[in-house]
Image 1: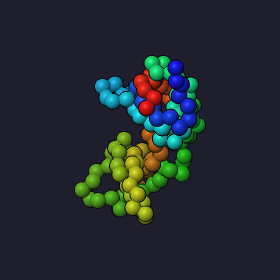
Image 2: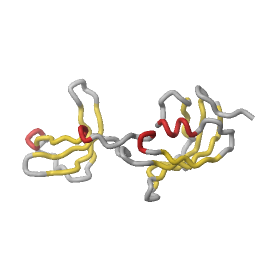
Image 3: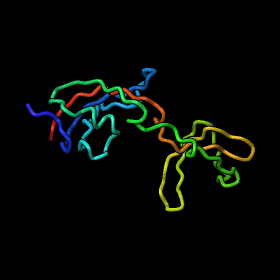
Image 4: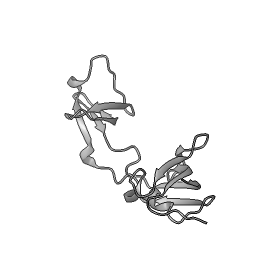
Length: 142
């Protein structure tokens, strides 16, 4: 039976959990996730975790921070002047916002602090700094 190798396109069902057991994502009720192994379409630990699987195999992957979304980067936490916020916007801690940089790239940020002059925004990936666990099932090698 064929096993997964670098360059194969695969379809997998998955259930992703944090260390506290909370689910952060799942393919349940949706089509399986399709990606090409080694193409950088998924996090490194997930990519490497399907190698040598056969169709129908199930596996639990424990992915350390460095093979997931990496550690939190303090350089991506910034103070943004309240004077630059539209007057009709009322930021709250935990609120997700979109910003754009000088090149016009749009990215997600989370409000993590508010004081009289600034709101503090975190542009790290929401799962940065988290080890992840995935239960996966190989559905197909395309």
